[in-house]
Amino acid sequence: MNSHPPSSIPDPRRILVRGTNWLGDSVMTTPALLRLREKFPAAHIALLTPEKLKELWTHHPAINEILSFAADDTVFFAGKILRLEKFDLAFVLPNSPRSALETWLARIPQRIGYARPWRNFFLTRAVPPRPEAVPMQKRSVDEIKKLIARPPDPGRRPPPSAHQIHEYLQLVATLGANPDPVSPQLFVTPDEVETARKKFGLLKVPGPIFGLNPNAEYGPAKRWPVEKFIAAAREIQHRTNCTWLVFGSPADTAVASRIESAISSPPAAIWNLAGKTSLRELMALLKLCRVLLTNDSGPMHVAAALGTPVVVPFGSTSPELTGPGLPGDPRHRVLQSDAQCSPCFLRECPIDFRCLNGVSVERVVEAVLQVA
Image (cartoon, rainbow, N blue to C red; front, side, top):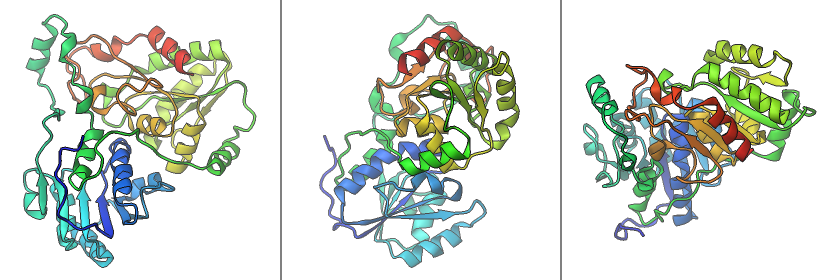
């Protein structure tokens, strides 16, 4: 139920949404954008996004216009460009001072975002934090050692209402939009999928197509060991005769090549696509996959938002806060160990990596077979 009183702001004609800066976070904003479109069906809604994420929003029904900025564009440049668009309302989804300053420099009359240090002056409505919000606070080594000395506590996990998608829904609810969650959604066309099939030689492949994403940009503490990916992929291929598509950025080519070499002996169908796809091509290929075996990462969120089931071992992060799709979505499998120190939200493990080492190859294989 919407806890916000009706807004006194007249229905806006031109709305700017300042998008988030990371792939996974951007996907988690899509429920809020869909609710915003539902609330203001006649409004022109523009999304300001980093240039690297511009392709993510192609064909999205909540968006009329995509505006982008380069990594080296200054805040003053962004403000000047936005000023020309004459928006009358802005939702600032990131919590950074810069994102709020951009809308202030653009002279947008109404600017709504969460209250945070160093930026409230730039907002006309600084929204208090949600009571259900759980901070993703990094643990110290001393905290971790104390936690692992305690007996297991199954009741310590956050509730579904703590998920990040509710943060963005709460923000658009300040103007009367429905805060009830819907699944994150992205869109690719059948033509895009067919074009990707042809480009990467996937028109005739043996067995079903499965995806494998072995990396996570945040750091090693989010990455299930490569040796386990290899063992799981070989067993799954043996039992399903699948074709594997290995995804990754240019920085992942060495890991992807290692996986390709290991799975190809004995011979198996595998396409190493690390560093070879645009964002739209990645989306089309993820849509093509029957399942994606992945770390907690941007591609995990993209696949889930395209309707592809994901299987993901979670380590240093919390699926209750940033898991794929809606919390409890039965299409996906989130696998965790019983490590008391997880989530620690650290980039690198300061002890023995028990959170992800505790997720066995056998569990992953069975999870993939269940959803594929």
